[in-house]
Image 1: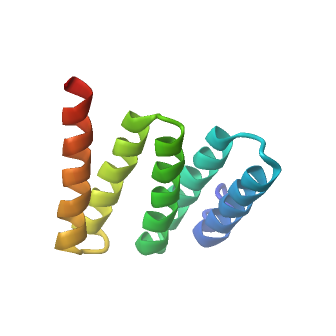
Image 2 (image 1 turned 135 degrees about the vertical axis):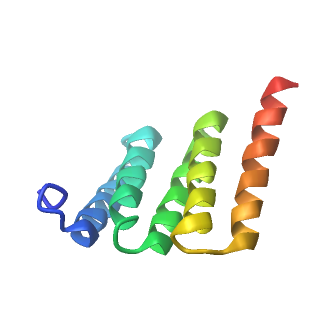
Length: 108
């Protein structure tokens, strides 16, 4: 409902709460990660740094699940945010390097 109304902060807060509930109940890490990713999409419109925090949680969950490509995609999105919406060259480079190393390791 918040997302449809374009109340991005409230929508992000709701998705974070949903992620926390999924994590607490043990319903599944995939649902937790998906809700953090949705929260990041909402926060990206109003507070990119909070979006980065949500994407980091998503990447961490996917890494724990062994879904390294999904984690790398989240790090790529984080790098893009640091490149354009909340400029931080060092963080941008660090996340792009992480993605590069992750993709290289999948081909070895």
